[in-house]
Length: 300
Ligand SMILES: [Zn+2]
Image (cartoon, rainbow, N blue to C red; front, top):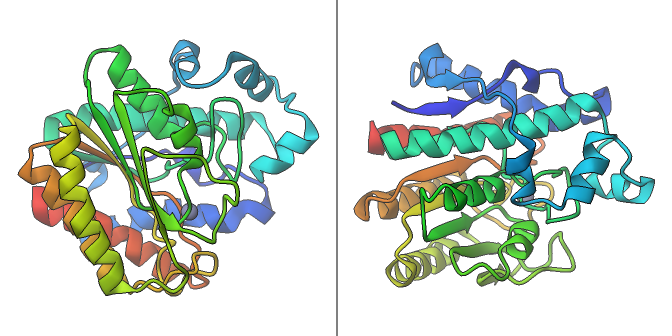
């Protein structure tokens, strides 16, 4: 069964100015329900997470500043959010949703978090609307519980997964692969195990051919027993931040290729959504729903 982490808290988490980027978390499940791809049974509400698990990834001083809402103003501005108890709770639930998703991925091959992909959060910093790094927290959870030994993080959001790269910089059990816009945020990049920076205006053929020549080789080398996939749709030509030029069809082919590789090698995949900033919300929702649609076709 296709399991999707979703919580009603996503609907009203933030002040008005931050509402737009949050709207998709309501619209994606609504669209999938409308199409009949899922029923309420496919959605689950993640709970909270033990602090200990957060501290396997994040610095205790940083976590305390989040929990106590005492993050210094400059660092708060870097996150892009006004800090609030609700916001922190939401971030913790997102991370729990990704961990739960890992368990479902072991059962069903693939599982989703309708949010997540908070890849700019590093060990001791938050940045770019990311406070806690959901897939990094889940990766450390799998390692510490001996549920996986060789993890591959495939980050195809248009922005570099700088937080994820930093967190696993010296960890031989997690391979970080980030394909991203070379001239895009974050402007000071960290070093992933494999970075593929793309020129502005990169289109369908070039993007897909790079992915097709890179990913199978990586899987052959690393032999991962678990994959995290960050499926940002800010690579679309319509995206106002992305600077790349992919069509929606190519974005779906990207997702299909990742899933086909995972299926071929029988590797469970947890998917977090990541970014999407097309001016028309329909484009964002449609491209994200494509990731679910293709997973539904291939797995279920
Ligand atoms: Zn992004």
